[in-house]
Image (cartoon, rainbow, N blue to C red; front, side, top):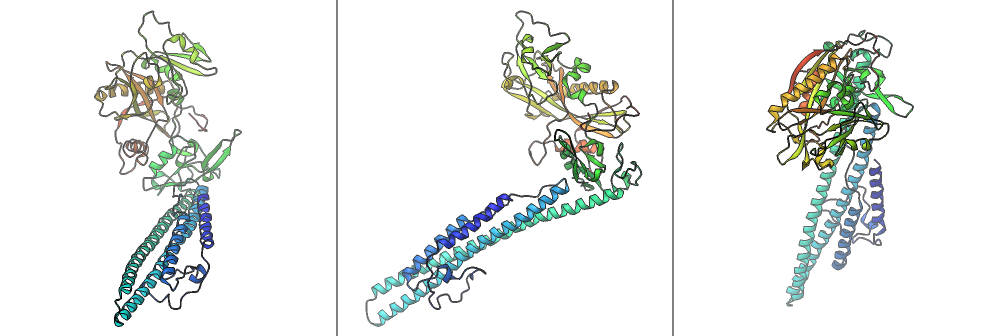
Length: 589
């Protein structure tokens, strides 16, 4: 909108400039602006006497006057702001966002319509000047014809008269060409302005429809049409389950973006592709002492899906996920599935340090990784275990791992590792766990050929998803081993009570990083509970829309959905949750 205000100011400046460089006013020749089928003067435009662009009765003066008028019109057009609106409709997740967006769209429509009107007015003025020039040129042809006729009748040679006639005809043809061009530009400008107005009105209509749907959602939920969310009370103090809003009786299901982050908004957008899902607006909930603002569904009602677990019928975070995403905790119970792992805390070894390497042992990198950070942002390399403590910082915890021997390399000798996607579901009984793995995945490939002596990140640390894995010749052999490894991790985590059940369904899409040896053994490196996911709108060629839609269908089935390439692995029982467990809290993991 600020950009639009600046454009409007530039438009006013252009109009002022047009007035400043107008020549002194002069009278019009009587009858020189006779009726014509060409474009009429635009409504509200200044009269030609005032504008100073009127024609002279002399042809020479007329040519200069009209050319000057055309030049000045072009100058005005060059100073006018373009018809470009930067505000487009985007889905709003709160009442404030919807109202602010609607106001911006309306203001933009007003400003851009004014800009378009000014463009059209100048084009019409150009066309009118061209019409006047054409009328005057036609009059000059008639005068030249009369002069030629008189010269012929008087018996004179008429050479100069004939030359004047030829010049007048050429000038008339040129004036007609300019008039046709001016009329074409005027018509084109009118079409552009109308098309721009139509597009802006479409954006406004989308905003209008959205506000109506939000209002309907608020009314429906307030009247008991929302879900009963286990573990919370209705705002009026009544317990969940007191309304007749069983899932089968409801017309619509609701999701809210509470701005927690992660994939919450993404999952909402996928659910909203279903015809019976609607946005329920969010609002500010509270602000903590650090100034961090938390949001909740409007009125603190429960919804079917939200990234704030307490208010959601479906939880998008696994309780106990810390045992998967923290590398040290992971190594505590599945260290046999990982490369040999050691721990540094506050610049001291926890437990036995790695033994010194024997003299003459072949070089092999050692990795020092902060336990609670992902994406390779905290990974450093060194050549020997004695150097690892020097790479750590105070008050931080690290896992230390030696590179596996004889890794399976990519075609040109580059290091690579597997991004292996899993779907973990905790059922509403608080005990049952279900695991799915995705039959496709990604390879992360180093840009440089691997060498144990090269300790650079480009060679040793593979982070970015490089390509799909389905055409990798080793995938059919490796996939079952990765699946079995993840299955064992979940089996142990559930049996030991590390994964904690809720009284509602909970799920999470988690990626596991695997590295493979030349004999196709696999080693688990880490889990990422917030993995990279790409949507078709942002990445049309390679995206994860099928994977996400399939996962959402498994968690919340709907007619017409499918599981895509998700492969059911197993179901197991975990430790029942405590009877008086605390309700879901912020960032509960």
